[in-house]
Image (cartoon, rainbow, N blue to C red; front, side, top):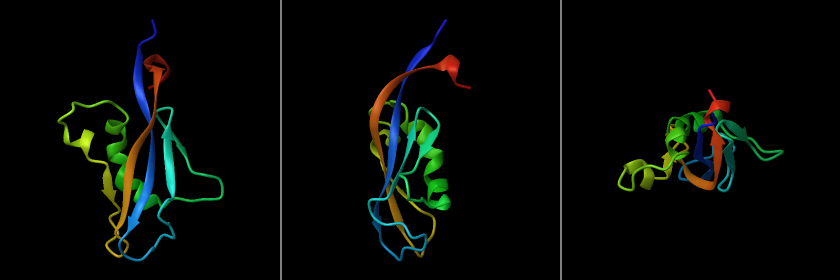
Length: 105
C-alpha cells in the first residue's frame, strides 16, 4: 500500500558575499535539491563543495512543512564556514510535490 507524503523541492542561492569570493561563486549562483535527493546545478556552472556542506544538514528539514513557530521554518539564511569569504546562501522552497514513501529509503 503506497504511503504518500508531501515534500518540497529547494533552491539554495548565493545572496551575498561579504568577503572575497574564494570559491569563484557569485551572487545569484544556485543549486537545487529535487525529488527528495537529486542535486541539480545549472549547465556550465559549479557550486563549492564546502558551501554545500554547510547547508546540507538543514535541507531534510526544509523539505518538509514544520510547525509555524519552529525556528527552522522561519530561518532561511546559511553562511559558508570560510571566514575569508563570508558567503551567505538562502534556502527557498520552489515547489511542493507528493511522493510515495515506499519508493524511497
